[in-house]
Every structure is written in structure tokens, then in C-alpha cells.
Image 1 (cartoon, rainbow, N blue to C red):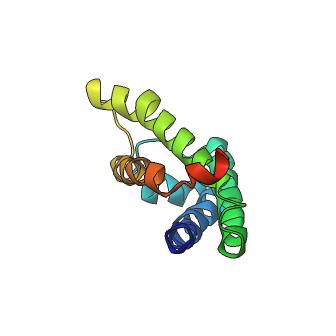
Image 2: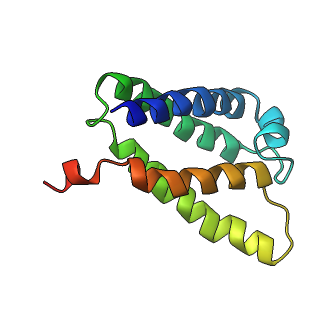
Amino acid sequence: MIALRIIYVLNIIVAGQIAISAMFNPARAATTTFGSAYPPTEVMRLVGCLWLGITVLSILGLWKPITFSPVLLLQLVYKGSWLLVVALPAIRNDAPFPTGMAIFFVIWVLALPFLIPWSTWLK
């Protein structure tokens, strides 16, 4: 339970700050979060809304860690997919991509399988 709560706190801090930036100042998010790899667009606001959803579910997860743990599976799937579909081809083609985000996503994708309460879900 402690590990889940730590992950939720990290989600709240990181995803919350990025969500606010992406939703309300996509130009700033384009440089800070996305490392100037992409121009600011309305899609950044959409991603900000996703991260706000993760933040809200993580806040609720502080009180009910197991109940809200599917948000971790969502993160595992979308971060892993992004790494495979966006970051890996960009690396292969020497194209711009948000390197900082990719590093953070790799760490998260490697850690989450050990933190997701699989045994609770599979009962």
C-alpha cells in the first residue's frame, strides 16, 4: 500500500503540474514538457486533460489505493505505447521527440509492472 501511495503522490505532483501547463499554456508546455519537439497545438490541451484525469484519480487513490490502481495500468499501456509508436521510431529516424519525457516514461514503464496489484485483480 505504501508503494501505491508513493506512486499516487508522484502522479499528483508530476501529472498535475504538467496538466495545468498543457491545458492553460500549451506554448509553455511545448518547450518545458515536450522539449520543443512539437509545436504548441490543441492536442497538448487534450493530453493535459488526460493528465488531469490521472491526477484526480491519483488523489482518490491516496484513500483507496487498490480501488484506483487501474489508473496505473492505463499509464503502463499509454506510456509503453507512446514509447513504441513515437519515441522508438523517432530515435531510429533521428527525428525530434521529447527526450526528457521518454526517459521518464521508460522509468515508469519499468517500475509499474512491479507496483500494480496484479494478484488482487486476478482473484
